[in-house]
Length: 222
Image (tube, rainbow, N blue to C red):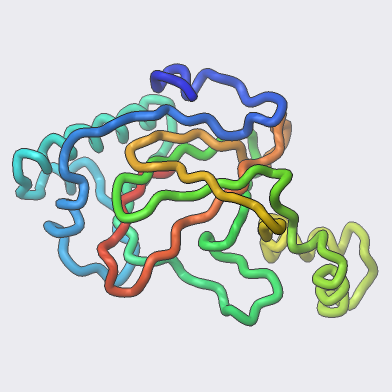
């Protein structure tokens, strides 16, 4: 837990610490953005100009100032944050051997050293799991055996590339007794990704399940 954006960005990951939280209690009405924007069929990003164009109540205006401040904080770090209203994400087929959607436990990945920053403002918050409470699907013997059959070759470098190309290597399932922790609302998180030279294992997390017709979730992510 840290107490400022500067600490959030500057605190190094080490040991078992692969997720850092800047805990905040934000003022304002963040649910108003979904009400004002109206019904959505797909993920919709809100730029600063979009936010400024909305007619909001006094509480909505308080929230708007905070959202713009959060966007600018990340932009000043050279990042490209996205503020999204999310009615739902694409969902994997329930029959898939390895579900590869963001509702499933997963690690973010990058080809260069980088982290993920995110903040949930409404509806439901992201969840994380301790790394010792999860296992990769591809490390489960019966699942790996079936994937090898589909690959049609030996368990070597080619197979590992096959798994990577399909993002199978990034998805996990909880072990018995595993308990998630909530990222909460208004808190800004920095989480470790699976990337070159990372000093720690990636943070395993998932998006909260949202239902068709539910109010869109408001999320900042970079």
